[in-house]
Image (cartoon, rainbow, N blue to C red):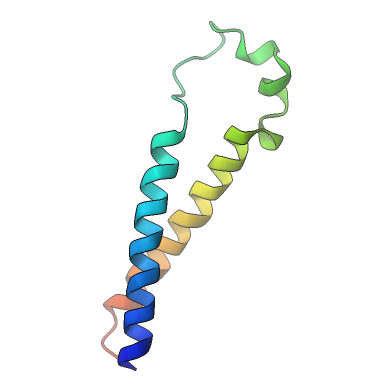
Length: 76
């Protein structure tokens, strides 16, 4: 069981670092329509853009963060 705990801890640390990097790479949401983002191609297809992919990756890594934190908190 100790090997499993070490593997999960390593995955948790990698997820923490990756989540921090992904969050820092994202653009701010304060641009709004002043920058004309609503009328551009990338504004309409945000799910297919790099920003959309980073938002999806943030959600997945955040869920993984909480699951690993809960599992590592158990006394097994």
